[in-house]
Image (tube, rainbow, N blue to C red):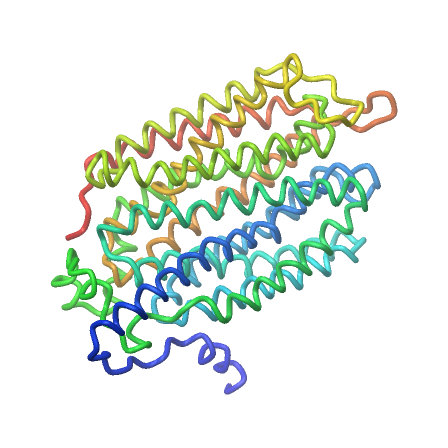
Length: 462
């Protein structure tokens, strides 16, 4: 029993310390910790994606080596996202009571070990088991990050800071698409996993030092007191963390956001998980140039995430509805262009992204990434934080995340089967027809935007 309880004690938040009396010291320590926490959340969480997306880039070489087919890869990807979905909710609830630094750093360290082992594996069954375990470690990232932002930044700051942190999604994905594709092209698919595991384990060790527990555990006042920003505080003071979490889980608007996010993640992970293979087989790109196209999409996703927070906070007085519709429309437009753009002749392996037709692929990828960046900020977390008690931020994000990754998991299974059903052999090479799968991704993206409009007039919780 003690062995079972030890991990929970390891993650438990520390006791509050008496508040420091020197206001100068309070300000110095608060600002130092706020910068340390925000930058650690930004860069630390980005490397969770390195441990998740390397598999997406390695798919074509693994298919060519006869390791797995597309249907099996869909099952493996689905296993990670299913355990990730459950874990994201569980760790979101845990995060409201825990030492965030230990949860996030442990999750990245565990994920790095799993992906390192992935490079040694040959059997489909072992791939399935390891990737499912990786899903749990991956789930120790996003929800605790959201809870940490709530602990260290006040209501009027949260939209901007949350959008800055949301850059981690696209930064990590872009870094992975660019670097891991080059490593795999030169050294083989196994080194794609080994290099990711080694590098991410080093980052995890740094996070144990640079992330932080709640402000009160350092002798600091709550962020509401520190910034004199008490929206939600009087009501929150009368309820426990458990009551606040239950209230968030019973909020119908949170569930509507969850349904919207399910569909958004089908489109998102359709491109993330299968985009490199799609560009190689349908648009005639090499693995490196395909990674380059999606790298550009992630740069634009970063710009979309950052700009969405500023636009919402400073142009629309923290109203998320108009901004959500704007970014959703841009994402859908990008998917249309991404599909209709003609193939390029890139069989030479040169970086011909700006060829006769390549520019349209870049435009489509850019629009898709930019719009997705804004949607990830609002639909996948920030609106849920706004309309829930600040004591239940982790639970609210955890619920949205669980539903989102159920959608992503379903996408992997359905997409793998649809792509495998379109398999054919051309000039001795295995290729696939992506028409059915892409229609599935596009329909889900449109549905996500329509569902987000249902919460158009929802108010922030005061």
